[in-house]
Length: 414
Image 1 (cartoon, rainbow, N blue to C red):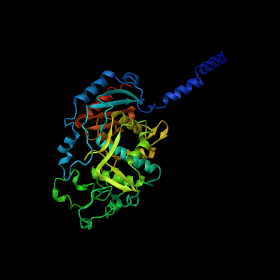
Image 2: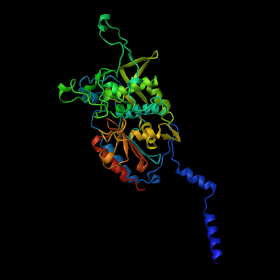
Image 3: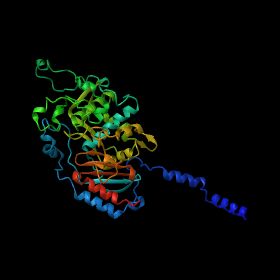
Image 4: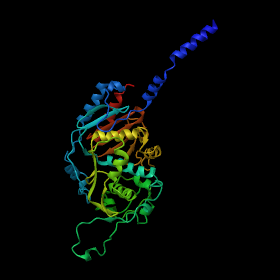
């Protein structure tokens, strides 16, 4: 009787062993889905990915209802905001923006969209995440040995292209022929990590913008006289210094950064051919006998990335998968770990422009593990590893972001 029992148990286990085909299917189902090249991206219903369709629609309706009230004419919006700063005039291209827009991706599948997700618009400081990514690729390839290295040894003297000749040769006697962005005693001590974390306190003027003119102190007497803080000790969000990082990265790559981004990130993730990354009318340099535009890290004075929501979602999905795309490491896990490590003087900031939810102070309704790529507008790529979720939101008023995310997360049932 006992032998018969064990014999039946053996047959039961054998019958329930998955066949090789079933095992392969199980393993395949555990492999994350990646969309094919644009426009190939599979859609699923909210229910198919464990979300409540009605609640998700409520969140979308909320986002649409909380459109940013600033002018949709980006040039006018800049004049009314950053344009009021010293030397605040726009020097890069602007574009009138579209309707409130977004895309929701769960488990890799598009489950919702609204507005104009294929409209190419300015994405402002989300550009910084693309900039830090090309630096990350340089680090991963050993072109930059370590983010702890000082930047100065990597940056040769820069010849700025000046197509308009001086009226008199004497006008240029006291003007430097070359730009040396890391030659002051303070700037010589700045590391790549300092620039990436916006803790460099770099001093100088680049593309006609002094460092102190960006988000200047209310006390004008301090603009040119204050003592510099040691790199790494003080955080300040400053687009002049972001543009210094772009120029330094250009010196390392020795070719236009948009080409580098296209080859190393955007083409491998299947992005569309419609995005563009611009600098300024005066940010052209002569490098290896060629004219190259040094790009900007956002739209503070115009320029930056112009891109649609689906391409933003692809980039967000890349960062959700910790830099891997279909098994290919476009950014190393080590780099993503550094990018998501809190900056000591500003714990809700990693590398630019990875905003972290440390202690759930950035987005209280979201998990502490969530992060986001954020730009003015508000443009945001919300990345939530805990819920396997990416949400692109464009042109939502900043004060409504947390409530919108709360409603999206409330729609998740499993």
